[in-house]
Length: 163
Image 1 (cartoon, rainbow, N blue to C red):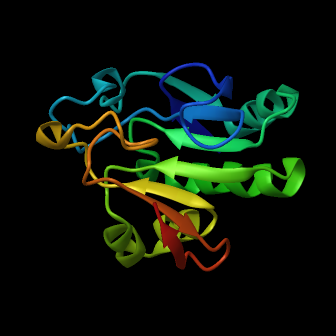
Image 2: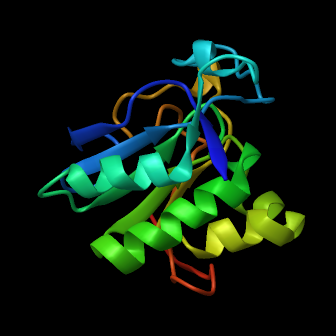
Image 3: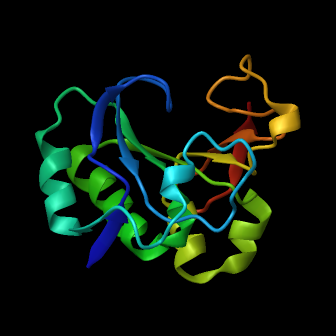
């Protein structure tokens, strides 16, 4: 299985979740939010196609990380690949897993299938489209006030609390 990434994997990231984190930047997004900080990740034809085993090997080489955050692009455009990586990171590395999404939790849950399974593999979801008129640099880990930081119960996807 392969995943389309917008660039190299990051490590020691402190802005996309709590603790030192690895970050995987997916390529491809249908949302096209006005004011998006990553419009170069929108195209489904750009970026690099990478074998998931290569991604796992690279993630294993990162030491001292608390977890993995999926960014984009839109991670939920590639739910099968993201799910496989998410489950592997939890099982093999003991990491917690976060994801950003321009979609809201309720729509991801209703989508079912691999989308719902990927959602259930997360510890936290930052959901909702970026809305330029609601841009707010004071909301932690979010770009606009409408976005929510949802802490989820692993395996069930149930919302435990919201920040």
